[in-house]
Length: 398
Ligand code: NAP
Ligand code: MG
Image 1 (cartoon, helix red, strand yellow):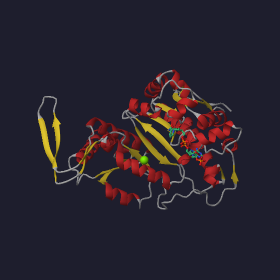
Image 2 (image 1 turned 135 degrees about the vertical axis):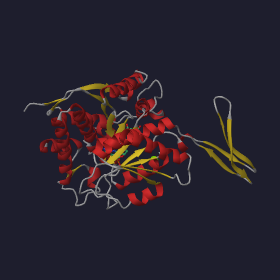
Image 3 (image 1 turned 90 degrees about the vertical axis):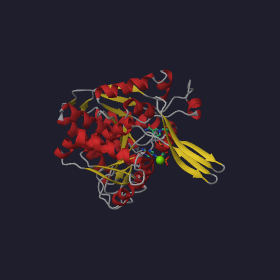
Image 4 (image 1 turned 180 degrees about the vertical axis):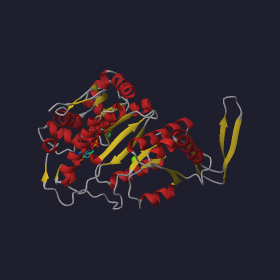
């Protein structure tokens, strides 16, 4: 059999611990036998990041921007314990944080659905995708607690010295105060990422705020989304038969809980924090969740939603063949390869990615799965395999 050819490369970002081990198994068993893989490889293992003072992370981010598509393994974010464990020179910032900032991107999370793992919300037939704005609001706030009466004011001093001053509250006694902000630029980028994602995945986009109460602050979010949509995306959405839908956040929550899913729910920072955990928990397992970082100019980086599965790695180091679920890692690769094929006009690459996804899901739906899923499968699993056996079972089907 001749291998499927790729026109352009994707940026491959290797990672740490159990996910690094499985990354290689997935490549050896599911990718390399079928595809003449063209990648620019960057080793984002913790030691490499430390040795290069994070230069490798910035180079990888540049490669994703240049090539348009990246795929990333999970990586350790260093802390005091890791510093000792890996004999690091320094505490390095989160690589995901660096890449997100370099791409000015938004992360979208989407459950992977199989018919024998039931989510807890029975009406969600299709994946409910969540996009969270990752800048500002209460996450960059300024707070004061006051002990007694006084006047709380909101003051803005413009660069030219002119002032805007408004009274927040004449405080009659002790209380609390908070200042928050966002920027037009960040909201515009967020809106663009959401609309790009909607077009890419061919799903409607929902956005919601509380603009009836917060007429200026949330009102600005609503205005910017509408402007970006009308100016840059409306024609393409209509051509694709897609819709942009705006509503109030409480109305959105009520509708989401009765909807069949299958759309992107764009959320402000706090709403996204809360709702993404709700959606993840409702869908059963972090290993059945894809995650993609999209930049406002349409660059895509695919990854798993979970971390490096440290506890399994330590058992693996002692010689155990762990039953770590590789599905989200496999889907990171299929997402990246399908996007590459779509951008390059190589349908055979897209088709291969679809076949690999189908082989993975069919294996689970036939009752063959890893331990995490066996705990929640209904009907019960027929075979519970270790990661290597499970990947072999997928390869056989493929
Ligand atoms: P984790 O890797 O998400 O794993 C936490 C627990 O969730 C595991 O111990 C396991 O539970 C379960 N789990 C997660 N993924 C699984 C899978 N594929 N198959 C089966 N079970 C799975 O989080 P962590 O162990 O707390 O963090 C390890 C490292 O990951 C940290 O250093 C953190 O910085 C990093 N991290 C990286 C990313 C990223 O790069 N995207 C994201 C989050 C965390 P059981 O042990 O009960 O089986
Ligand atoms: Mg949270």
